[in-house]
Amino acid sequence: MKLNKALIIVTSVCMFSCTNGFENLNKDPLAVNEVSPQLVLPYMQHEGFQLDIGEYQMSSLLYSSLYCQYIANTTPSFNSGNYVFNNKWAERGYWTPYYQAQLKNLREVEQTLGKHPEYNDMYQIMRIVTAMGSMRITDIFGDVPYFEAGKGETQTPYDSQKEIYYDIFKELSEAVGLLKQKREGQLTYGSEDLMFQGNVDQWIKLANSLRLRAAIRLSFIDPDKAETEGTAALKESLMTSNEDNANLSTSLYIECHGNPLVGPCSYRNEFRASKTMVDMLMNTSSIADPRLTLMCSQTEAWVSGESEVQYRGVPNGVAQADLAEEEYSNRFNSNVWGYMWGYTWNNADKGSHTPTPSGDIIRPLVMMNYAEVCFLKAEAAIRGWEGAGDAKSNYEAGIKASFEEMRAGAPEGTYTTSEDEIYLTTGKVKWEDNADFETRLEQIITQKWIGIYPNSNEAWAEFRRTGYPNLNPVVLSLESSINAENGEFIKKLRYVDNELINNKENATAPSLNGGKGDGVNVRVWWDTNRYN
Image (cartoon, rainbow, N blue to C red):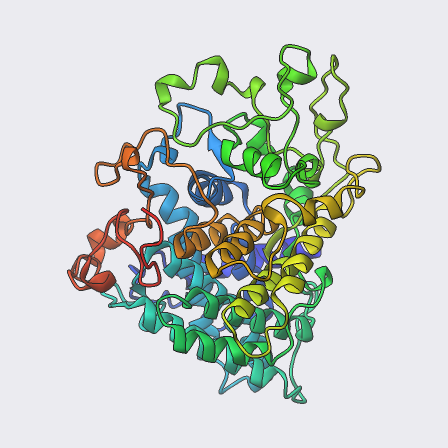
């Protein structure tokens, strides 16, 4: 396949031109030192956002999906759900994809612009991709190497999260300004752009939407800057429908390897839907969430007639020794195999059971969706930001956009639309204009948490920013600095071993993270203590 060849070329190039942890200071004289953005971009997207199952598992499924409580671990083989740090997962799942696949390649192409002005618009799209990655890496680790990173140096200073966020605003706004000029003589992306196939207008919408995301992230810690940037973003073109969703198609992975991303990990029986997730879908409104069958499977035990419980989730952080108990077993708890992921579990009648991949639905990996933009606008509205529109209208539009997105491609009869209005207008979902700020914020973030599923990195960041939705403390924390019995949660990931060894002076500086240093119980800059 043509795209596979492009990825092979890019991988080969990056074997020479990219460094892992900045340790290779000397360039191979035979290396390819100048590459086309058309070859680099798919590598930045594919590797940088973990379209390979191993890296996806190490980042999302073994860290952020557990920490935002979309899923719960059910195998004694893994203990990151008990807050045990695994360096390999953090490095391969987060650190290396950002620094090697994204930032390093951005720096490489930047150096060629004087010689190749026709690359300029393609470079602006690379800036947007990297800005998305930059936001994620600093949200996960706090202060990180940024301004001097990606230049081939081992001893790289760390920059404050505030400075990084301020530069992200600059990167996004400048990229949009240049792309809007529609200059002549510019080369453009095509199929090698795994997200928008070179559609510049959609990249502009994504960049503006990301700017609004970043602004909302700072709304508690830096409200003036947040409002300035958020108001500016609201004046620009944002995502207006699910057609604008920033999707990375997993069909590439399926064609090459035969499996979608989430499905194989589910099929290995290493996790199930969390108790938090199932309870949220069952009890937030007066009726079950209409998305329930799209997000969670019926329990295997219910299908086979062994149990009367149709949907059930596992508490997060169950002790490894207790996972063998029947109540935590995979058979008695719901998988994340709703029709959203293309499996036949839910169309099995009670008494028969065929939980096998259907192969009919290929779900993309969504980096940002229209539903999120609606919820961002809803929060901007309750904060009084100019141009945000009506809070209730944005909030309900976000829920409806999520309904539409999750139903796309689902087989007939696997969901119903008949109770959508009841869900929207009853229970804790119902919007009251006269409710106080905290009540409305909790509603917005709870629905955002559901509506952006399975974007776990963003869901975890929003919990740490707001304290919503109301997550359950893990049953057992094996991290001495986090006392789950006192309701404490993990705050971030610590720095990876490669940094602590090769960049020790910078990675262990006492001034990091507002003078708090490093550790999984250290809050990042925008985390203002709204949860334990």
